[in-house]
Amino acid sequence: MTLKEFRKAVAESPDVDFYQNLKLDLNYQHINFLSSFSGVVSIYEFVLTQIEGFESLEDLPSQLVEVKKNFIKLKNAIIELFNNKNKYVPTWNDNFEILRRKNPLMFVYDSPETAFFNKYK
Image (cartoon, one colour):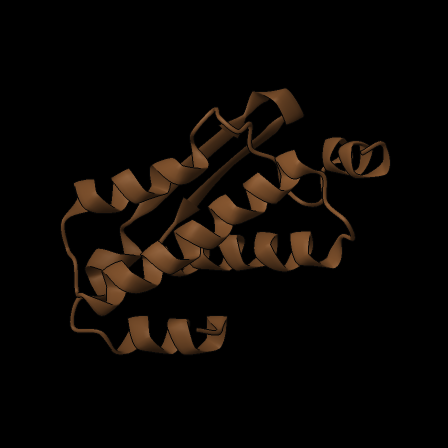
């Protein structure tokens, strides 16, 4: 589902307030990345950007392949939860945990550390 399609679906949902109140805080200390996202659309946009960014990099080392897979897992989980009209915050948070795990260490596609890993694979 494209960002535009997802944004429209959320806006037209009778539960739009619920989806706008979902939050995700990420702190990847090892790459000095700290960010907070408010609303499922901004979370989805971040996830899509990461997937597209990792797809633009050639021949990812195995650790970064696993990172990319985690972003894809969360994208699919968001779509599934939304399509199922899930309004149970703990279930959403359990799925957001995919990006909070420490194994594998998570990276963002445009960090210097990702560039280093990709260069010296």
